[in-house]
Picture 1 (cartoon, rainbow, N blue to C red):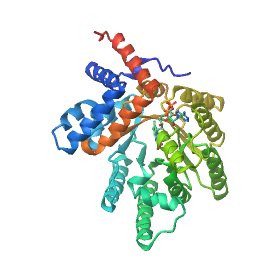
Picture 2 (cartoon, rainbow, N blue to C red):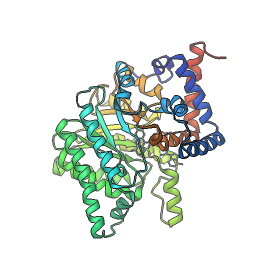
Picture 3 (cartoon, protein in one colour):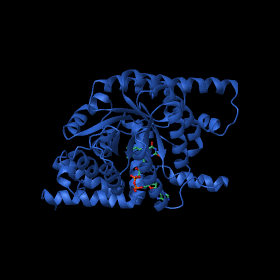
Amino acid sequence: MLPNFENTAIAFELKTDSQLERAYFLFKMIANEPLVRIGTAVTNFAIKAHLPVEGLIRATVFDHFCGGVNEEDCLPIIDKMYEKGVSSILDYSAEGKEVDNQFDFAMEKTLEVLDFVKEKDAIPFAVFKPTGFGRFKLFEKVSAGIALNDKETAEWGRLVNRFDRVCKKAHDLDVSLLIDAEESWMQDAADDLVLEMMRKYNKEKAIVFNTFQMYRWDRLDYIQKLRDIAASEQFCIGAKVVRGAYMEKENDRAKEKEYPTPICASKKETDENFDTAINYMMENLDRFVLFAGTHNEQSCLKLISKMQEKGIKPSDNNVWFGQLFGMSDHITYNLAALGYNAVKYVPYGPVRDVMPYLIRRAEENTSVAGQTSRELALLQKERKRRKLED
Ligand SMILES: Cc1cc2nc3c(=O)[nH]c(=O)nc-3n(C[C@H](O)[C@H](O)[C@H](O)COP(=O)(O)OP(=O)(O)OC[C@H]3O[C@@H](n4cnc5c(N)ncnc54)[C@H](O)[C@@H]3O)c2cc1C
């Protein structure tokens, strides 16, 4: 059976009337580009000036897009989602840190999360971002093949050590670990490192997951090569497949530095690339465990048809669907209602530290206009159904 993404009663079942109204109000604001620009500037100023705006942020955007300020704080919503068949991934979302003790802190946080989730069926994955564990510039230098000086070599060693400690712990505790993908000019170094981790820790099953951004036209090749390496060296590939979040930045840099953009020439090409990657993995499920991170309904439906074609049950642990908390509930909850492995990234952290993440969500929803109008239409439909309209 195919999910019905129009079923708003299922999609918003966990939202009280006032939460539904708040979501509607928020997406209406987000749809307004000048308002988002002004709102972002005012919020940034207020935070820097230490004005007491945290309460306001918490009651609005924060509570919509984040699970809480720490792991415990997220538990009530995680438990509620799990009752509806939706799993969670705790995503510590403090961003833009640049010094060693902060990288150590992020690593300790991930180690803590691994301990925390070990006994919790509701949280089947942990996650981290490569540049949470080391300096962006260092990844960039290694990716470009530039020799490191002694100090940098030692710094890189510490970074590798952070990756290794977290992946080893995930392996020892048998918790799957997603590693996000970032800008292409730092990603080669991260990919090489993740490959090493897969070699070490994915011998019996996919513990370590890399992320493949299918807006990059070179990724299919990379995925196929990776499969060959995995087949000859006998390890599994954890594969989070996404379209990619840094398109404008990628295109701007390529233009400025005069090299061919790594991004597909059109949305259609990205979509085709995404579908091809998914189909390839589905044909090679002896090597891949697939996590489709997408808010695109068609992509989910195509993956479901492929599962049906291959006789793969909705609850098969080799296929996962992921969306971000606060977005595309119509996909997540309607998939879960039919027994598919649906999971939410649940960002959390101190309100101030999570601000860059929240601002990105607002900006992204403003730029992906179709997505916001979709959210608004669904929220409106549910308001009507509940007779909340004014
Ligand atoms: C659970 C989860 C985890 C994620 N993890 C990561 C991650 O680790 N790294 C990361 O980079 N992103 C990540 N993302 C974000 C993701 O890459 C997308 O930006 C976001 O999900 C929007 O794409 P979509 O598939 O949902 O849907 P759609 O709305 O169908 O696609 C929008 C995307 O299509 C692409 N696109 C749009 N216009 C064009 C164009 N003109 N030419 C070429 N391509 C175009 C862009 O990638 C754009 O983001 C994650 C998303 C989710 C849900």
